Image (cartoon, rainbow, N blue to C red; front, side, top):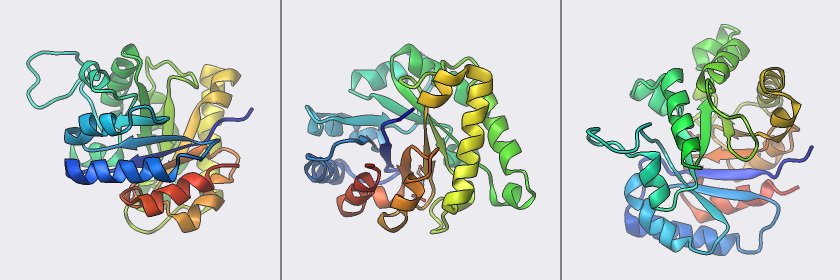
Length: 252
Ligand code: 13P
């Protein structure tokens, strides 16, 4: 079963409105003739609306980096899937390791957010991954499969409605990348668990992205692995000159 590769840029806490608009215009221009790969950008919340305007008519998805699983109400400081859809979002990252580590996000919270996003026809990009300590203890698969099961509790597992991202915590922003073989091993295990719990059609259709120090120099090899369906790119997504070659490397 062939899955269209997807490359997403997680801009994290970077870029003013002017900088974000300039970046997305560069990405749009640099990928206008690119076919065979889906693209998503995830700006900081204050830039979502202007980036949506800059993307008008372009086949590039727009993701938020987080959400709160209620539509409206007394939840100071939060943003809901309802409001994210209203500004033009198509996707939302949930359960990023920075949110799990710095903001106490739990698997149950991730599942609630993913469900709320799907209720508003937004596609959650559900992130998971092990820490260095867990990898060194030989617990990588146990940790990742546990996060997968719990973060997808009550979530519709369907290729059009869900994206997963495996991001080993020790590879994020460190310049250390999982070897293609190590990443493939985890991706394969995740897909087999999807097959067991959600059936072959879902397992074969859900895209599993790799994230953690993906750069133009290492993208092609990572993305050629059979169960790696794209990349969730942090640092290298902040410049069109480095994001566009990664998008190109995903086409096969
Ligand atoms: P880096 O590509 O900067 O390692 O970040 C990866 C990431 O966290 C994407 O969500």
